[in-house]
Image 1 (cartoon, rainbow, N blue to C red):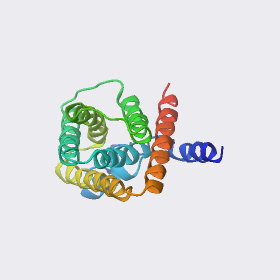
Image 2 (image 1 turned 45 degrees about the vertical axis):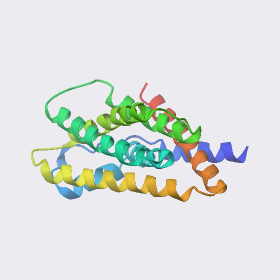
Image 3 (image 1 turned 90 degrees about the vertical axis):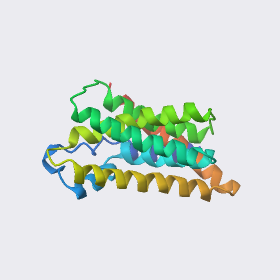
Length: 191
């Protein structure tokens, strides 16, 4: 019961509006790009959990899935700057938090190609959200959010390496469940 209460409290804290979407006034610099993934729960949790899930799978997923994630994220950024306007970006980013949390919580497995595709799809929408914030000076902003995203992915991989002990694996799976609940709450707030 205490575990469920903890997850609900943590999820309530994490499931705040997507503050990463701060408007175009402050998004033309390297610093704004670095800050973007850290300023919203949706980006922070999803990007870190993408690294965590890749690290838990191990083998080639650490490289393949993460390269796919960064590439698709940059593709989403480019799509936003080209004027593509899908109407479900916020829902997709919230869904990615929920599903990545569930992948970790339930240790769901999938073929490497499917895993790369799923992470790439999630990354596309996160990149799109980054791209909608960008103003005319794009390169410093892109470099900033890419570096910050790679750092968050690396944190996720590092946490996966930490889970060699059973106690740590349980803690990570509980955290995954909490992230899944937070994603569900984020998604519910969009309805």
